[in-house]
Length: 397
Image (cartoon, rainbow, N blue to C red; front, top):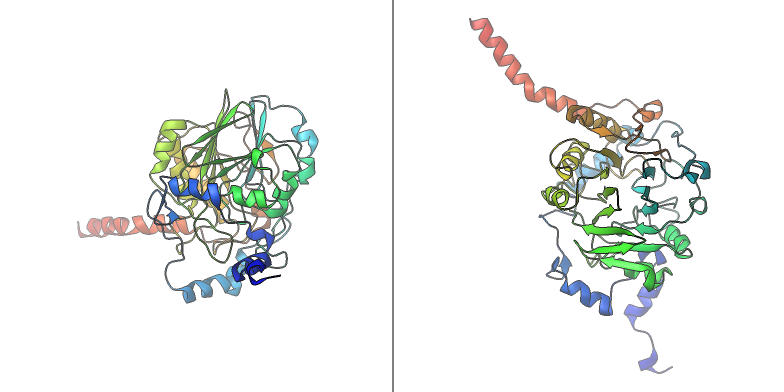
């Protein structure tokens, strides 16, 4: 072999990286990325400014994250009561034309107007490039992927490991499903065996028609990356899926931003929204929403008032943030009651129809440690000075 024939150092290093890192966009795909109105200064841009790295002192964050008593609160005390979804649950078509099955974290099966759409499917044991390290499942998947049956479309919100899972994609690559993904993410799929003709790669506000339904990539406030060098060359997105009779919204991962109102005005209102409400922290307030922000986003999407059903996602399955394991469920339950909004709180794997009876039982309480309800404490603190002042004034009279 001559020197000219020998692989470069870059090529040799690339061959050593884990398959789970995926592939970098190149060629015509990279040219399309450069032409995107959402790509500038060599990277994809957020619709509103966002810090994508933890803010504040990393030492202080590490103290909080690894403190023994805090770690105990971030996992369930016992076995999570998963609903063992069976073919019988999904055999009959939904009576109302729309059925939702939350499979844990951000993985959701939507049966809409005779079609089946699977969002962010993650069946792996860890959301990590390595099988021996990284956040591990806190509950099993409700059913084997092979038992799910055929799906018309698989929708990916972005390429982080808890949303784009290598073993799951490789399993789905052997089916006839079509993949709808944000711009640049197709490079990962092609490397893992998905044929290019089964990939629909979209920029924000672009739409693909699949099996008679429309799938539109809409803006989100987040970031991307799988490898050691995060080049921000793959887009992140929320998604609108519309059939002849129903329409749904999946937020992917996002911080709160004013664009929810625009998405709702153009595509809403929605029969159900699937809203990220877990893995939030004061250390990264711009890229993940608290349950209160998630409720605000839902109302924005619905034109300003309660409508349809809200399904909280991105919680309960992986330990990804300092907050207690059950806090997103409790906080969302409170936020929904305050807003007068129907919120769906199914066990992982429990199907429901938004127009029918929506599950609302706080199933997590049987296996969770007591929490402090900090959102309630802050509300009391906000009103306490007023109450004290009124008492003092009354005393002076």
